[in-house]
Length: 80
Image (cartoon, rainbow, N blue to C red):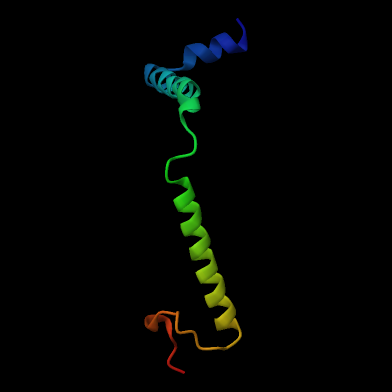
């Protein structure tokens, strides 16, 4: 009897159900992966991300240089 046969016999029913479930999810993923792509609002999301990146970068530059930034929220200002 090979090691594989002994290994297969030791697996209980709950483990088999879990293995079958996970394998079926894997197969389903391979079947439907071609349906995923660029969404209709991709360009809007990229533009929003760039705007936020610019805002955070500008705030970081002004704060690092010691210049008080009016764009910075008042709750984050220090009382020094």
